[in-house]
Image (cartoon, rainbow, N blue to C red):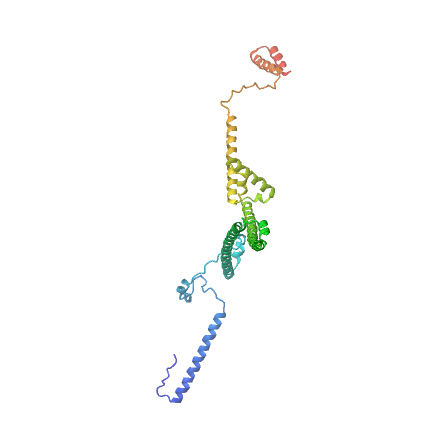
Length: 344
C-alpha cells in the first residue's frame, strides 16, 4: 500500500505542483477510458459463456436488462405479392422485409388516396352531368311552350284574315299585315328549329348512353358465362332465353327488346336451366318406371351339354362291372379274360 502524503504543512508551491500532477493523471485516465470505449465498439461480440455453457459472472448483471428487451415482430409479406413468392420473401432479412413492407404500404395508401380522389371527381362530374341534363330538359320544355304559344298567336291573329281579298281591297293594310305575319312566322320557325336541334342532341346523347349501357351489360353477361364471348354461342343461347321467356311467361317481342339489364337476363337464364333440369329428371323417372319389372320370371335351366360320347359312357359302365367281376370270380381264366378286356 502506498504511503499517504500529508499536505498540511506543504508550502503553496508544492501544493501547486501536486495539483498539476493530479490534473495530468486525471486527463490520462479520461483518455484511457475513451480509448477503451472506442475499442470496445469496434470489437466483435462473443458469446460470454464458459466451456460448460454457463454464463460468466459479468453477464449476470445484465440478465435483468436482457429480459426487458423486446423481439421485433415478424414482418408479413405484402398482400400485393403473389403466394408463390412466399419462399423468396422468407429468404430476405428482417430489415429488407420491413423496408419492402413499408414501401408497399405507402404505395397502397397512395393508390387508395388516388382512387378516392378519382371517385370523388367522378361523383362531381356525375352531379354536373345530371344538372346539365336537368337544365337542358327545362330548356326544351320552355322552347316547347314558347313554340306552342307562338303557334297559337299565329292562328289567333292571322287565322281569320283573307290575304287575297285584303290585297285587293286594302293594299296598304295588306303590306303591313304581311310584314307582321312574315316576322311572326319567322319567330315561330326559329323556335321550332331550336327545339328540333336540342331534341336531336338529346336523341344522340341517349343513343350513346344506351350503347354504352348495353356494352356494359354484355360485358357483365360474358363475365357470368365466359362462353358467351363467342358471338355465335352468345346469339344462340340468348335467343333460347328469349324464346323461353316468350313461351313460358308470355313476354312480347317489344318487351324482350327492352330487356337489356344483365341481372334480369342472368335470372332468366338460370330459371331456364332449372326448368330444363327438372324436365329431364321427370322424363328420366317416367322412363325408369315404365321399365320397372314386377316379379322375375322363372328361368328354365337347360341341361348342360356333355362333351363325353355315348361310347365312353358305355365303356365306363363296363369297366366298373369288369372290376367287380374280377374281385368276385374265382376262375383264373375268367379273371384273365376280364383283365384283357380292360387293358384293350
